[in-house]
Length: 312
Image (cartoon, rainbow, N blue to C red):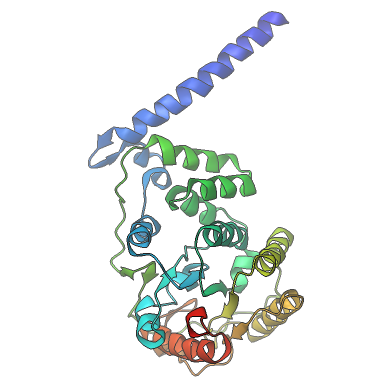
């Protein structure tokens, strides 16, 4: 029995030592212009828009407005419009499929270090229903703050994210490998194309949020209330082809969760004049014409209902 445990301990030690060593070699030896590990899993080595935006963030602080959320956020809030019409600097912390638990940790980490006049959380039905790891993979690999990456890793408790976290420290090349041609600045990505033929009406499916996500949303609201974070909840315009009943259910859900805290809520999901074939480039995202309409309207509402500290 003692021999069994001794051999097991030797094997475990070899794994703990050799695995990071092999990871380090594969991550730092290049073939055809990219690390060898990229041939096995491109998520491990590839950095992109978030990495690039974090460089801008560190160089151009301070910012008065911060936006968090999914691709709706990073494609839906143009810092140029906010600077022109509101005379503030806005940074977009949005990321692909950013989950509510990740937004919770992101907002906690960011608001503990920096002070903002307004913190916008962009809300979307699918991020309450989504149960995959896309958001956590992207953020764990790309965010500048290592504590935030560890918080996300601990939140998910998924062994697959351990490889992503290892990549942060064992792949020494710090340049980003993916250049988004639609990237503008401060985390914002613009689309100018429009839908050529809008899809047919999507069938109704009731709103089915994850219990863990709902709890984290309530935790986020409670944290912002307890720490005087100037949170604003926003639901973007949605194409008429999306489920009207589901949007209504979602809006009622947000109002119910927010009732104890009374944060400002701006719901444009069904209250807008946008045309699907002109102001959207797919059924999930506005193009630049839609963003300009939405941002201008939001700024007008913010000015009248959520005054900046600099205006006090």
